Image (cartoon, rainbow over all chains, first blue to last red; front, top):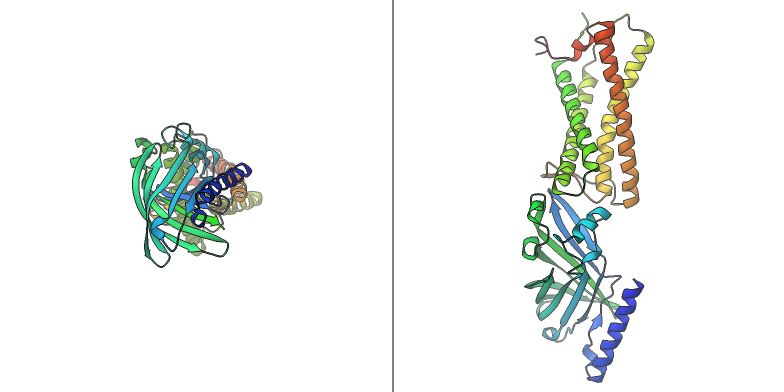
Length: 188
Length: 180
């Protein structure tokens, strides 16, 4: 955690410096608060709802409420840090037929567009990359600017098959549909 | 004349729950040592569904038992055997409730709520809690070990009546033309 936060502050300090130099400090991309942010994946296993937590998330978001279309986000999660609550299950999903964390240590989302849907609702579009495969996705996000932080929440439906997560033998016991839920906190 | 046999309902429930308990026990022993695989998850589901079925059957048995007195033991039965039989049956009932309940709680505490037959979600009555899950696992296993010993005693007593005393006591709990 210490490593992440120091990396994060180094990254955001670096970015801020660059942006300051280019005279764009008012819309600087700011690192997310990894400790307060939460990214989970829920799915059904023989009818049983199961939740796993991605315990390492990082990234930068530049949100401009006045001009939402100029906003952007770039997020990464460590696939090896997926916690299903039991170590042998965690070890299983790190394997080649699941996340293949050795070859693909990160899953990423990079935005391409933001649109206002009215109120605190926005439509985000971009590229989701898991296990080396990139797919264009679009999903609604609720953005709540608060005094100390901005909170981005939403969920993204993901198909295991599309990203080749889990081989055919598992399809009878684990549903194809997975929902990624996120609550990303960006402290001011 | 006093009833000398159990009712057809009691006999059916007895053997049905015995069969399901043995199946759940066998699955439980096998599944815990398996490496992670789809089959392992399937066995866990079946084990849990069997356990919940046993819980339901035992609740039915208890209700039935409350309204239908068990047939009296033969008059010549020594007092210590009457007491032992009574204590044994009480323990069996308590364990048949406690084991599925502890398994249910263990599953909930581990973050895997029970969905009976993959269709009917059952409520969690303990929170998701790793430490609690560890303790409940121990409890579930300990109670099962005790049940196996009590069942062994139950079985040994039945064999003694059948082959040593030759008093035909087993017929009270076995199917016959008179049963139905």
